[in-house]
Image 1 (tube, rainbow, N blue to C red):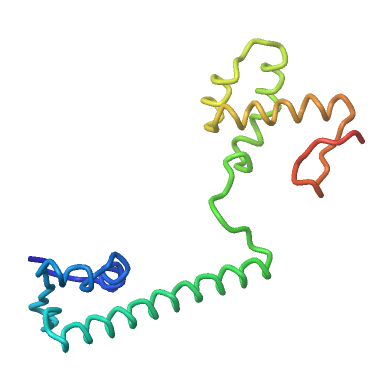
Image 2 (cartoon, rainbow, N blue to C red):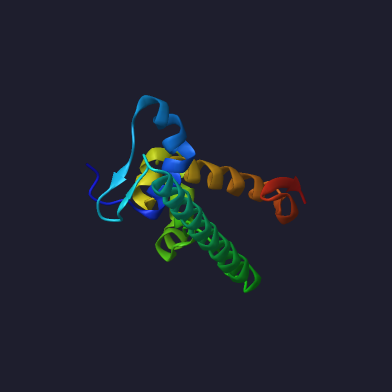
Length: 149
């Protein structure tokens, strides 16, 4: 007994195989709340109509989400979770941590824990700082790769 069936469940029932694979096994789907039975022709028709409507609804939601993301990009908004490296606390403490890393008095894990970022974030930014101090600069065109400047 399934007490409730959602839009995505109807779509999933159709894609998993739904009633065509169940019919030879004598398995049907009876929805007491919606009032249809897939062992009858009318019930199968109703299941297909509901599945098509559910699929349509999900596709419309997907299109609206994509349109909203495109609009946000055009407005110059950054999508996704903000990087912890841009937090004021991390920016303020990074020079001190960098000095301690360079001096060898602080390890990468300890620095990461202190800043609240991952060890890979600390390692990457430490390498960037070393290369920038050696006269190399970041090439923004190639997405953060280092280039002699």
